[in-house]
Image (cartoon, one colour):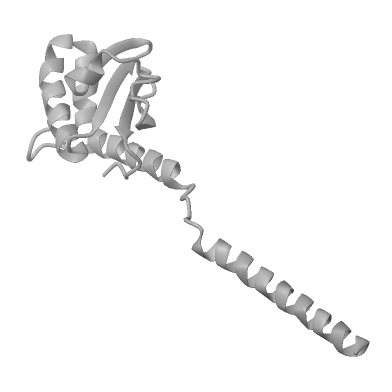
Length: 161
């Protein structure tokens, strides 16, 4: 009788061990996965938007791109209005109702600042509402003149585009 009880206890321990392993495995398989690469992907998207924007042809059938117009604008502020309109149109088309701030600086001086009216008064370092994720990208437009373009986009967890 004792031998049978020991065998039953041993079998019970094996069953408990197998069930524990199965439950742990199921927990890892069914656990919702958090994508830790979302912020990196969004930063890459922001930088791609900035690079594409800077390299976009300003006028059809010319070799003049927006970067060239930004450089001209940095020498003559009266040219900035047309550049702002062109950049604003492109960003509104690409970012489709997302909250954003684009700031183009020469050194520490802001040359161009664009975005929805509700965003323009906000600080560039913390422009997003509490429930939104801030993604920031920046590129150097011109090294000699120290012209920087910084784009901050606020989203609710989804991708930028």
